[in-house]
Image (cartoon, rainbow, N blue to C red; front, side, top):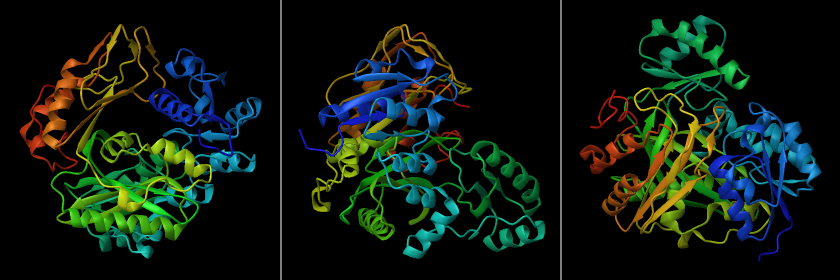
Length: 453
């Protein structure tokens, strides 16, 4: 067991990621505390933690900083792991943890605040030298004429984005100047409702890019490494459905240069922890769009091809230990693909909560399953619809695809609707199997399968 400066970790999350964090903590010999809402009292990970604290009703619990901090004090936690989603990129939460004398397993509140503001992040990354799309340097002004002039200088088509947004909320694609003012008003309203801030910026819209991201790790000793790249282009309404690593059909020298630039950017901004730089890729060019200052849903594909436990590394770095691997040791071994299985209806993609009558995860060589399901588990209607991540690793992309196809066919989930048929169709689609599809793949009907819109 590695000697760490903290002994008890409170896990401020739920579902499969809470289970993943529990396992990493147990491997490090750490005591774990699981919090839950009243709707999550039967969650799988709660049977594995050392202490359970219920912090309130279903809808607000995991977003209540005060309740989480009270729970941390009650159980005498030394550190808090935020997982992803919820408060994981909330600078006020990180600040509350820091001010309480606890360790926030993530970057500092100041870094989260800077990189969480997409306008500030773009400005900083441009100054460092990462390529960015043409766009506004500040939030669009309230004056309609000034907005119109800025957008004309950027050039149409363009996209409006919420400065503190994500997941497609606050986004509007504009192809003509006449669309600007009504779209800007609705984007500001949506951004205010979703993120508490109305700031909107504009940037050039790329019609059919790929979504490529670089995984980074950095410690407090000035060491920063990049841990390969992921292709996250299979999306629906800006929500990722499938990820793979390495990205197929890419220039490896260009990827290497981009990874080195991201690691250098971490050193430049004093980043400590795990993070992800996200880029659009179009006609041999990369354009920075944002940095996620947290663990990603899709981290398993990177772990599978690099043989590195990213969650353990994240905890070690937060504890003040140096990175356990050098850049020279980090290179891809084979190929990995992850399918996100969600409890949604095929066709409409509407949430489909309910009782899982039967759950039989797939297995076999190269298959990894991340899930909090069990027979009889009741999926609550209050949270994200992700219920399982199926990951397939192979020596080649073709082998990984074959293993994934077999795993999806083997998997059994009864009692609820899922989008597993969509993933099965994608695995059999010649266009996807050839590699290099864009973010429009799902919504423009490029795939051939059941559930096609």
